[in-house]
Image 1 (cartoon, rainbow over the protein chains, first blue to last red):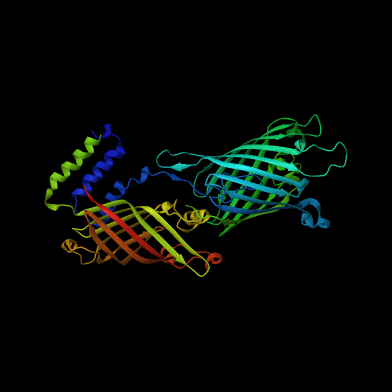
Image 2 (cartoon, rainbow over the protein chains, first blue to last red; image 1 turned 90 degrees about the horizontal axis):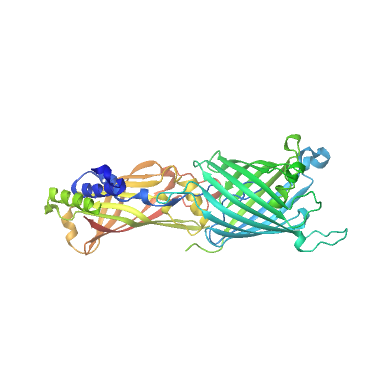
Length: 300
Length: 185
């Protein structure tokens, strides 16, 4: 008879029956309470799939929470194989300074400035779906990202570039799953559009598929990896896929990310279609991201 | 479907008989908040999804607290609380099972809050400790109001506070419990 009915509701009914009947010990009372409290019906969102808003070079599904402002300093030194004269890359550095703000728990905006090609960038990021358990459980999270980048470099050789020609846009769907409390994976299908390219051979639209992984080693230390695969085309023929490995170290309001990558730029426009370094021949840029969160408005 | 539930409830109620009356009280929307005070930072979190049952006949008390329902004013704090401190995915619930010390149900007839002591096992972060805490019970209409205030030391429950934030997180947090329980059935 029981099997003909929704198990949850029947269980609730039976638990109610048991609770009203048996004058049992406190442990039994707790068990009955657990049946009644219908915890399995409560929807819970999976939190902290990644520690920061970036995996390494690229974005993770995470956004700053509502009212939270994140100041992000990203640094890449020169290549390790540049030799002792360049102090193995530490003599050179490129930097990006960024600010990100959570308008809601799901929608974030950000701006940044890279020293590489004197580039300004801005982005909108929205958590479309959130991995959850309980009622309406979802196995994955999906975050949508749209970025634009404007190179403000002076071009000495004519013709002088129009403003429009200086823009590059990136669109990403970030799909992630926190498989266990320590292991998270992410896939990043990407479309990058450049308004202007130098040669007719170069592609205005570049397609790439990224993959990333985060494995926690301790509560506050994690190993990360990120790879962007360029789909076949002229860009894939002329450039290399971006590879990065690193560590996330968390200390209260800060996240430190230390990493090694063959890409020098810290925004999509650089590391996806313009990576030239061969990771396995020592064209490795050591770098770090430091993020600091400030809560500007308390959550309601 | 609903009929089955009602029938099951009715049958069991009939089986025990109406003599027992309303001795068990229950809520699933109780409130527990905690407060950590240090010279650097005050941290407060509130949980309004606390499940609790009190049997005023036998004096038995049970709590179940879904840890992920603690809401913090700062987003990052909430993430850290769940991920680094209480490890909510590993230990999703805190529980308490115990009994009212030297309590008889007749005492509840009189109005106004009544001081009681509760003794039992408190489980947080997978660690169970025997505790005794003060509280009050009050009959209001057909509801039972439960209030309690006590201190919990995070070290007692193997909740580690790293050196870097030790000046921002109190060693002992003040826990406040406020419930309005309905009679069952």
